[in-house]
Structure formats: C-alpha cells, structure tokens
Length: 181
View 1 (tube, rainbow, N blue to C red):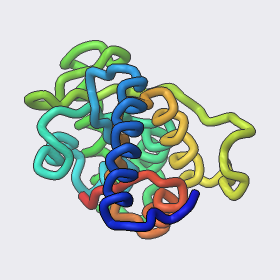
View 2: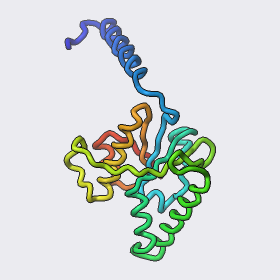
View 3: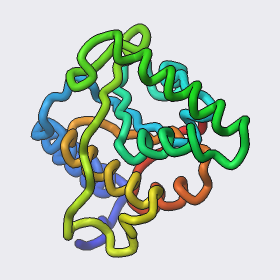
View 4: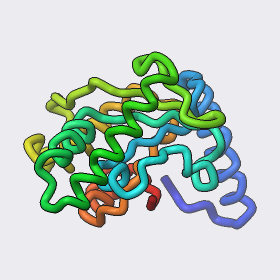
C-alpha cells in the first residue's frame, strides 16, 4: 500500500476504509447482549453485586460466571487463608445461590434492571489458545475460558471485572478489556 500524495487523497482512502469496516460489522451475528461481563474470583469476594457496572459498560449486559471462579469460591469457603476470606467467600457463595432463584441459570437469571447472569459450564481445550497459557493455573484457565466465550459471541464486547494486576496483564496480552471493581 502506498502513501497518498495529498491530505485530500488520504481522507478519501480513510473514508473508503471506514465503509469497508462498516460493511464487515454487518456480517457479525446479532446478539441480544452486545456487552458481556466476566468476573474473577477476587471481584466476587470483594464486591459480589455484579449489577454495579452499568455506569462503566452500559445499562444492559450479560454476566457470565465461569466454572474456574465458582470452583475457587467453593475452595475458599473452606480453605481460605483466614476467617475474613472464608467469610467473604461464603457471602459471595450466598449471593450466587440467591441469583439461582431468579430463573433458569442456563438461560439467564435477572440480577437487576437489564443485567442478567449465566452460570457457564465451558472448559477451555483448544490448540488455538496462546501457547503461554497454562490451563493448570486458575488465571490462565480464566483467560482461556474468556477467549472461548468471546468466540461464541463475536457480535458482543466482552469485558472482565478484575483488580488483579497479573490477570489484567494477561487480558491485555489477548486483547480483552477489563474494568476495575
């Protein structure tokens, strides 16, 4: 590709490229939830209410609870390093169990307003994942599951709620945006 000789020619090229991009967006499948949110274990421990992100990611979104997170919450209820952590894990567990009374956890349960949540059962297993992901490490398993979920919803923007700097770094490496709880 050559560099346009004038600003007018460059602007014309940009307009053409934008038209091409707009036509590609039309190829994406419609998705009832254009925004999806995944939450990590620390987020559920610190701030279990997943309906609080409307100011950052919009009023309508679907929250996905991944098996790796549910497993860690369950483990922390019994084996957390101190009583405060065990209590916070129990609080998160009660919150999650309370959501189940709002509907079918496989179809989506209402959290608040237009915020719904799904309890996922996906487990990452693919040769297409980045080779640096070690699926025995919970954070890496979370990233791999997030990529798998994103591939299943190409018409949606997938965010991750996390304050974990290591997880944020890994998310940035695979191009997934995050929000701080």
